[in-house]
Length: 290
Image (cartoon, one colour):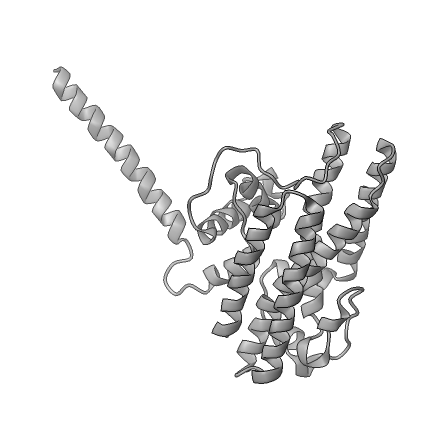
C-alpha cells in the first residue's frame, strides 16, 4: 500500500508543477495528459508484477489511488476537447454550449445516484463489492481511456469514481466559463482557476478539510443548502490553495484514534489565548494608568 501511496504523492507533486508552470489551458492539459498516461502505465506494470498483499490494499488502490490519476486524465482529456470545440461566436451560442456541458454532467450523475450518495457520505460497507476485482460483475463502460479498464486493472466502480472526480472538476470550470460569458468578460484560454484573493493558506490540507467539513456540518453556509465540495472550493479560492483529495483526507480524519477535531481544538485554544493576552494587556495598562 505504501508503494502506491508514494507514487500518488509524486504524481500530485508533478501535476502541481505542470499547472503552475503553464498558464495556457491547452498547454497545461497536454502536459497533464502525458503525466497521467505515464503514471497509469507505471501503476499497471506494478499491479501486473506484484499484485496486492491483501483485500484492504486492493480496495485502497482502486478507491483512492487509481481513480485520482484516472480521473485527472479524464478531466484534462475532456477539458482539452471542450475548450478546442467551444464556439467563438455570439454570447447566446457560447452560453448554450457550456450549459449543455453542465447538463451532460448532471445526466451522468442521475445515472449514478446511489453511488454518488455512497461516495459523498464516505460510506465503506460496499467497498468489497465496488473495489475488488473478484466482484467486478458488469464492467461499466467509460467512453475514453479503455486501456485502463483491463480485467486485472479495474473493478466495477473505480472507473465510475474516476469519472465523478473528473466531472466535479469540470463543473467548476463550466461555472467559471458561464459566469465569464454572462459578465461579458474577455474570452481567454488562460487558466480560469487563477485566484484573485491576496490571502494565502499556510496550514496543511488536512486542517483546511477539517475546517471545511465543520462549516458544512454546522449548516452555517447557505443555510446548509450546499455540497461539501462547494465549501472546500470556496475556501480554496479565498485562501489560494488546492486540496487534491478532500474525500480521502476526510476519511483519514475519521480514522483518527484520539480526536476528530485536532485543528479546531487548536483554533479554540488560540482564540482563548488571544483573548486572555488582550485582557492581560488591558489590565496592565489600567495598573499603569492608576
